Image (cartoon, rainbow, N blue to C red; front, side, top):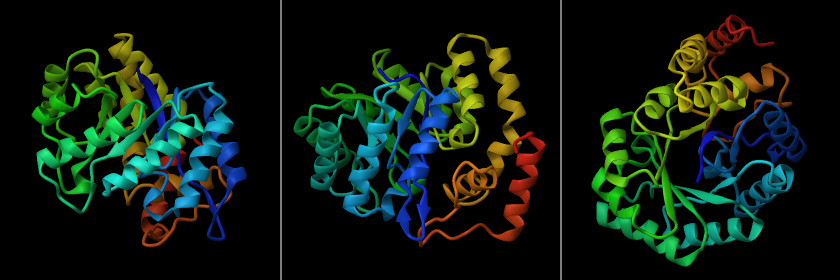
Length: 291
């Protein structure tokens, strides 16, 4: 259902408020640069610090701007099941094509609790759901056996896998079958995950490298591994620099340096990049030939 290079969009801020014009301009540029879908209000969109009203507005504005040209997977995850249902209902009403839902964070639910959480949202809202598994931010991993159970729930159509464990990714693909979308949640693992049967990537770095991440995904999906490898290794140094500090601070900094958003502003508790790391990012951008 969801295939290719989906960009996890940043949420531009100006003087503490969401910069709606900058977001709209960025979306138009990314569509022109060939991205194949959008994910607003994910981790890269700083969803944890958006108010309820801002969250709803960013999703609605993204859908309005995209105008069905590519799919929109709205970030609707929460560590409260009731809140996740509310956010997912809004996404459906706003016209989203699906929802990306992170594993409940901080609560540290059991595998049974994880299953019941996603099952409850899927039963409450008729909207395709992509589960987001990222233990580094949530403290819990969705085990392949649990993912196989989730794949049997009507409405749960795939997973953004950011475990960094190719063995686990392979087991999920094996257990869940070809009808279940497995998208890379680690930008630098896009090629290997597609090589073992994944169908694309949800990428923070696509804000900065939309054409290159699409090229890797398209080539790998077409079986042109030589082309995919060439791009993978060419952009490798910049991919590493874009995660030298907590996402999305380096991505926003790069976008501002390139003139693609007016400000690199992030919300506390995120902070501006350390000067030494900013210098490394600038060097990586220059080495990649970016303005």
